[in-house]
Length: 104
Image (cartoon, rainbow, N blue to C red):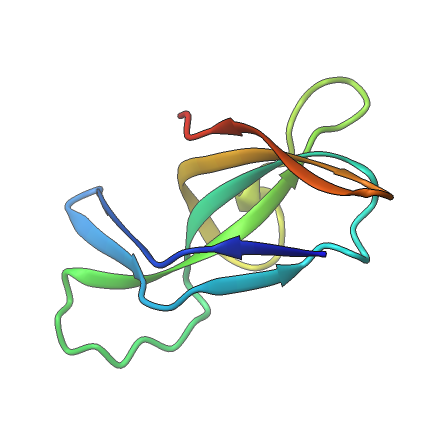
């Protein structure tokens, strides 16, 4: 069960964040539940691009907690900043399905 995120480009904070290649995320080890697929700026990725206005973007799966709140990328030790919600998915034993696109 794979989540496929196509290449994307986001203009935010006076920067351009780029995921130049398709990202494939194996969802099989993920616990059942609802997740936000969030574009993030990952500060730990080595970016050799000489254009300082462009940064490498990544994806964070933010789970919905039992109390209804969502996990925040900034609260995990991967040093990243949320840019934009790309989608919301539901993961079950039977597979994953898209339940919403985009958002803030």
